[in-house]
Image (tube, one colour):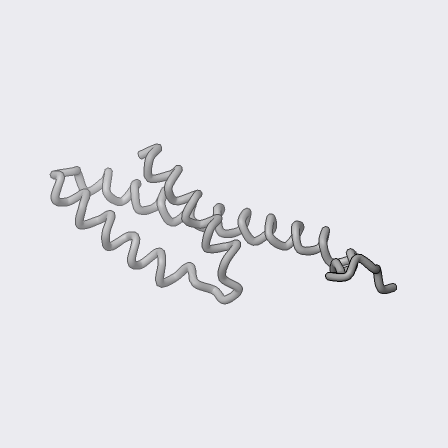
Length: 92
């Protein structure tokens, strides 16, 4: 279960940092299908599968939010600086 949570957080933060459109619903559906089939194949109880899918979806959303906030904060930190010049002179 903790492996699912850690990988969901990492995947969510990568998606939140990369995509500006709302990509979570297709990723949640695809990931839930893969996790559900894999867990059923391993013979997990239905309650365990449902809890795993809830943890996956929740932590994925948390990671997406954290990744988007991190990229936004990093972009605002660099927004005020001038672009470097190739000839060594600064404009501005």
